[in-house]
Image 1: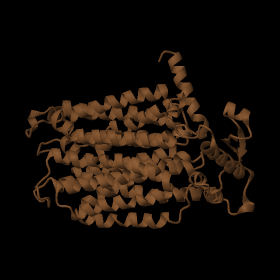
Image 2: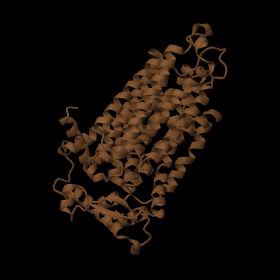
Image 3: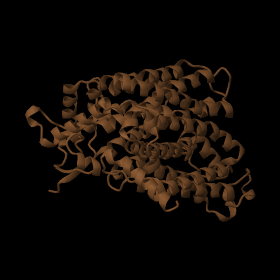
Image 4: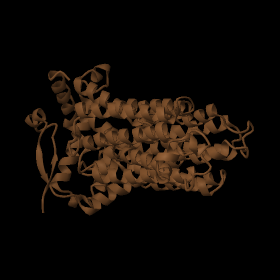
Length: 519
């Protein structure tokens, strides 16, 4: 059987290794119990991500009701401006949640901070149940955003703390899988149950999460930083599938010693206190810039806006002619789109530890560009503009099957490629390119960028659809994806299968090489 290799570096006992950043030791394959425990822990903390995915998808199926004359809102049907605020208010809470839960994770540990996330999440659904105005719904969305900011802030780092490098990418991909699965559930439930019944069903998830996480050990690094060495070793034994003291292998002892030495070096070294100088080193600058760029690209590519306003987009993309037969209803098209997104995320989970992060990002950005431009071209050149079929090129030159299926096919292709790379990989790479000393605050900064860019995109997207139209909006996000692919090709190092220790140095080497070559 082939023996897997993993990068190790004993920070105290191997000075030459630290200089070269390479110290290869042979390690046997992961035991089944180790894999099961790591997956078990990751699934538990992602229960709240599944619940949050439903809050992300809640807007699209609810807009039809909230914008109709049957709405229970005291102000009557929602306007375009109110719709944009309902979509974007989630991100206001996201900015609060990133900072708040980053602080709580340092203060009380990642596991306990995760437990508190259930509070604003439940508060959101209570606002939906009892709220009767747009303001109250927006307040609920802010609370949901606070929970979402905490999820994006803590879950990737929790996974990075407990996961073996060989399956770290797969486990990290479970976060977007659960978010997307929640979105699919929101679209399906929103199409078949009433506006007020949906929250009562969803509240089961945060209750289950709160119960299950109580049985999950805190991550070893958090326990070591709290000077609970024995508990930290027991935690690592759980996540590595070690059944007892006498079952500890040499590899396990070495991993725990390396982890303990690294934490001790962080906390006791003369320069252990975080300062501005730590952010000015080349690895820190390059890692932080790359993390921020990937987070910005994650949202400015428009994929989250497509899901949030899916029903509205399909209404604009469908031929308006009353004689057109067989066009999928916008609600069904939205379910198809969300299901395709989930499928792409699962494919990403299978590929991220096989083909690497960089290739997935490049293919994702270029594929989204093609899909967006296809839809933009269809809407601009072929879509009917009036109720009379004779007013459009479609009625004369384009088969009816194309007019029925091209919008959903092009958007499904875009979402599929987005889910394979751009919606999943940045959160994995973010934790890998940041130097360990600034990883905590750096991830807070990067996740704040996600919230800021998501707010801007969700607020502007309905306005753009109403002003420059669907074709212009799709062409704009296509350009963003093309620029993103170029930057990834030139500057992002491949972090697949590497220890977190030497990755920052490779970021710096890539930057130096591109600068030398005049890039």
